[in-house]
Length: 239
Image 1 (spheres, rainbow, N blue to C red):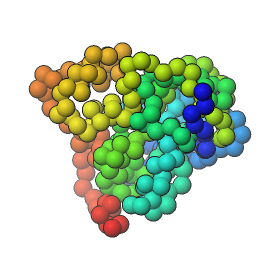
Image 2: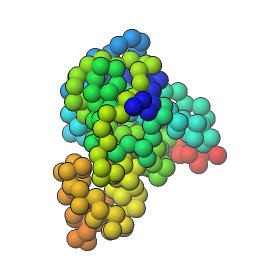
Image 3: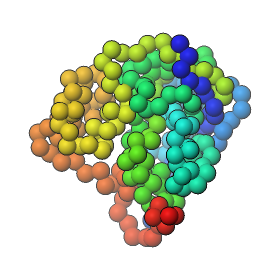
Image 4: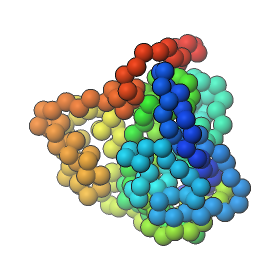
């Protein structure tokens, strides 16, 4: 069943980013490419990640981002052009609230499975030059989502997203993002996710279990980066 379409395919090399007086390496700055692009188990050929511990790998091989979000961002930030959020595939027709973790899609000749929502990090802020960009992305839920590659192949702009399988548990990327990153005090929802531990990365299962045990996790470094002095524009400066 066709549910969406690929609008833009993008890859990027690792480049230095300036962040609060220091330099960090990232592949978030991507460029659209024409024609079919090879998709391997580790992502699109020509795409790179600067931090292999937190980005890339089999479970985060391909990042998809709904084009519908760009209109919402424009109301706050002005016009942004894909792939402004470092996505590999800018898509239409499928949102985070639509995709159930574990769902399988045919895109081009590749077979992709939704693995997890993106957890925004400070490199989004560094890329846009807006200090609270990662925080705002997390708060809005306009995060995008990752897929693992079940069957390598080729993808290109205009390919359709064809849904082959949707798990019955019904847990969406949007719900996982909400519980993990936004409504962290929602113990009932956390327990519902833990009742289906196979749909989450093992590290997220451990994190949710710690929360239910009363431990508080700190998201500051992920969202704001290593502590360092230095001014940077915020979204408040644009309003």
